[in-house]
Length: 384
Image 1 (tube, one colour):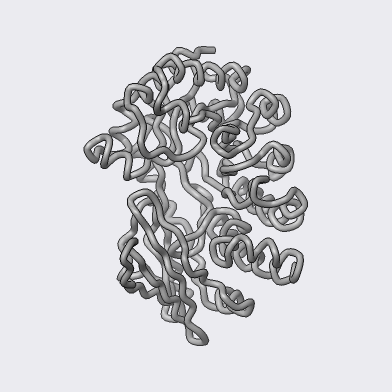
Image 2: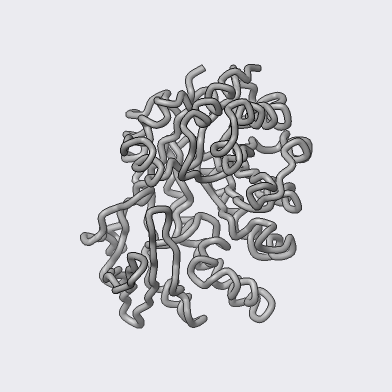
């Protein structure tokens, strides 16, 4: 099988020729500091992994006065931002002694919203939330643009990538910084602690907030018809069981993410639901969203709670499982044999009958390259 055929077989819970083996995002820090700045495509080829090409492309709706932001240069995993005369995004560097800091202003006819992001070589984070007053969601509902997918651009990318692997997209998230799931997007914009408290203090406002984000995502997903993605990502870690309770998942996550999954399916797309963090108490709830695949099955030693064998028993016939590998303890400070044993453990616990893609349970930054080679080599030996 080609890498594309192999991973598609697993996504469809069929048995491939061997265990598909890949990774989540290939971090720019890792490529720069450990591999002399090679591309993600070159990384997959060098280590013999089944490749993934991440790609997002928006299309403005000129009939609604939308256009591409002339000041925006798309960064890592970004599409070209869509703005309008009533939804302009301005950015300005803020002096800081430790981290690069940028303030973003969302300018509308009624009010200007603002958020602040900081970053380092590894990642970026929010230091000032965009939604500060509850009425701010009314500004978003009234003025935020609703970008659609540039289907032709996606299909050109699929043609260029061919059978080398999967073309993977995402449910659109909020401008500048966000997440694919409705709850996760809201958590970025308002803060997860504040959002959890609001589910008790003002649950109707939380639902109103989620509905605003839902409608924006729905427009994008409806536009995906004909786009030759192999899978699109939904969800995010703020809906994991190490962050929220099953009750909050049932009341504030599932009612929005399940319908969006259905919209994606109606547009001909497969969906993988990303849950970095705890999953075991809500495994069936995630599967009930109707998704085609679930990730990341983070091991206990990395802050998750996954028992792969139990997860396979409980939901392995309902969704493809992606992840499971302990990169923290098996990509550094161990022997090649220990890395190979971790690969075999994952295969033995979750690989039976197919429907499993081996992957680090999330990002990695500093690894022993020989251990990465052992990871890929041992996975290729796991044949069906």
